[in-house]
Image 1 (cartoon, rainbow, N blue to C red):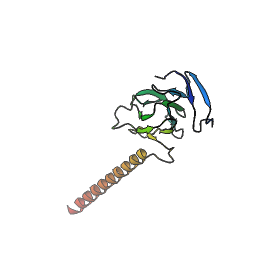
Image 2 (tube, one colour):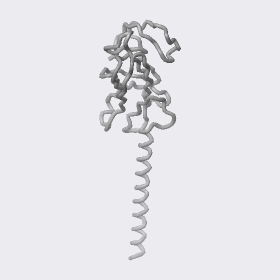
Image 3 (cartoon, rainbow, N blue to C red):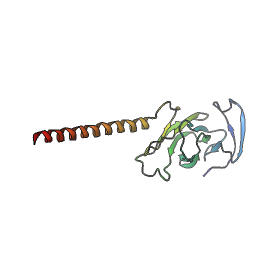
Image 4 (tube, helix red, strand yellow):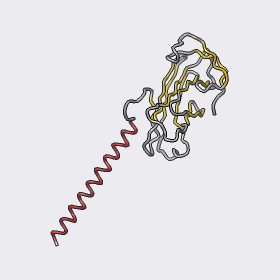
Length: 177
């Protein structure tokens, strides 16, 4: 559920390079949300970005929870969240098709008043891989995708070893009899 916003927020960072200016965030703005406890005088910001380099086939939205509140993010979308200072938590929420993962990507960190923390989500096209949440935009494969590729390499090596062993045994048995 999106949180309606009626807040004048202090902008910082590179969102339009309006550092030191006040901007009126009123109504249901799609690119800004204030979580409970965030005030114009005392808030930190989480900039959540959906990395456009890899996107879902069906252009689906991805559910997240930020400090226990659920939001949805579309491919290539960036959203700024005003949060109260202190412990912050960003978690990819399970949805249909993602219910059976061992663990969901999660970031726990501390934010201070006026601080802006960029968080990037990168979708994974690999089955049983929920994607990655990071503080920096990833170049190349994500760590979870690299682990999946490494696991596939081991499976292929073991399978080829079993095929070679089976062929060697059948070849030896054919000459032994």
